[in-house]
Length: 614
Image (cartoon, rainbow, N blue to C red; front, side, top):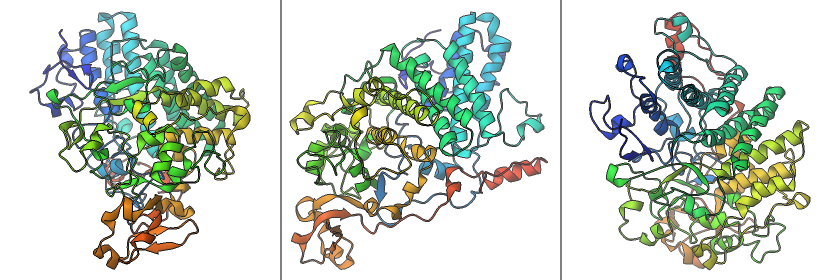
């Protein structure tokens, strides 16, 4: 059976069992009933079935203008970012329905999480069933074990996401007949029970999946990287939320084990600059990227993520002063204690030169009016893209025709998952202390990435290593978080800005109160700007009449533009009319199930319990 053409960065058989070759068909989970009688003949058939998982779980930058599970546009709800007017709110009422992607669109846009839908669990259970009952005699034992591991990996992936959103969920470990209503309409299983099943699936994966199944196919290293993510999440969630100490320890130990597998392989490293990860047309061979999604205009597989950081387009929320202040100086110290010249300056020009290099690689070096905070993110656009401001953009950086490849999982996440799990185990579970060697393999390996020529030309320097005996003294550290864990959390914040992690991190650390912007006035501020020289477009008669252009001085004095005081408009930019989001409670850590799903169960004579707190 021939494989040809590359979609998503891996070969996909074209038109097999499909009515047409339209791209939207290729993006759908394939039906299974109409091919069962003549399918599962060997590994080619099994691989074709498994290929449908890729665009669902390894989204990358998604496609076209679709924003679900994407950086920049899909993960806009966090304490890093502030928009004009009222901030986006947490869900405050039970939705009408949450049973499909369409019905869950609002949830996806805000939280980038799954809906109350178990079709992908069923897909994995169907795959396991067919492997056991149809394909097993036709393939080798090694192949059977590998493909069983693939199915169990994606089942664990889906349940990890469902649990992170809903907590307790019904667990299905086999294909359920549509006549088996008692099973189909079973109530929720306890979170710990479900995640123990996920743990078992992932253990099977690590023991049986292939180390190499071909370029851009799921393998043991990629699986281990994701396992480190999901086991860290659940282990820390169980710990910080006081759920189950034994389970927390077990999951965290598995996160370390999975991280060890990737790190100790020495297959990946930090020998390319940070910017190259997010704006390259070809990530093949990138030493830090374990899996990526390929985009190709010739195949009409493109995205829009780079366009929303091209200097003109806007997402609506941008980096705030709290995020800015979290970045270390290049001497490895916080701004309050650093001896670096300009440490106390929050002008964009000084921030670019004095902060950790990831600041310069993530934010444009000039104030841009399209940004709500005037700090414009360009982590996911090339340096060349911003030379087109005020001009016509090329297809690569305009509209939904971007072709930059998307990193799906990368080494930086693995090492930070790994070192955090080790630190939490040491701090709370009596495990061995984190050593300097551990930091050198994780935090300091990241900090030692090479700088690209453009950054060097601006005077950007690498950040000094993190040392066990001389951790930064941060006046802003939460009192309940030890210094080392605080610095690991900071490293995640600098590394993953605009990516998938921040809200999930706040949830697992039990720190959603950070989303209450009344706790820090810096949430409503941007960098220090001279509006007259850096953002003169704001100094209009209309804005003078409205009184909505303001800066805040270092002493807290607010200056409002009145049409005659342009020279005085120097200070921290105040985001236009920015106010806090509505009050929320701890129930925001989990999502409610839709009322339609509750009623559906009732109509069948069964009960679906609503999420705790709702």
